[in-house]
Amino acid sequence: MTRAKKRPKTRRKPRPPTAAEERRRLEAAAQAEEAALLRMVHDQVGLWRQCERRRCRRLRGCSDDIEQCRRNDQSEIWKWLRTAVKEIRAGQSPRVARRRADVAVRPQMETIIFDFPGFGERYKMRVPKNQPPPGRRRS
Image 1 (tube, rainbow, N blue to C red):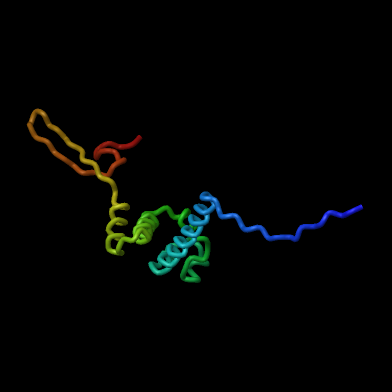
Image 2 (image 1 turned 120 degrees about the horizontal axis):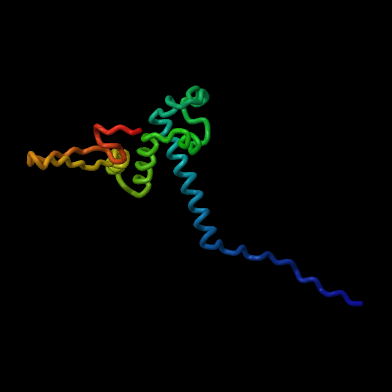
């Protein structure tokens, strides 16, 4: 009985990553970089002072996952900070990033026109959107 000759083991070349795998890898790297930048800005601005966790205040910085911290505090500070970081990462100068972040947290306004047909006068008032007009109460 003859034995079949064994082929020498050769290493396979690693297959190149697919487009979806590469995109996932790049997105994960971008998220990690953004989280590190947010943590640094969070600590530099001193938002840890407003944190409800004693550990953050004791360490004088965020002691936990920065994303978890952001989810707990859905304030305008995070919206402003996120917009500013996004603009800086897009290549904008810090001055432009600050301005665009300011616009992002500024309330959207709408104009209400009061028309008095008998008097022939018209009044305009700018109020924040999604709020009832003045004088009307929610029930």
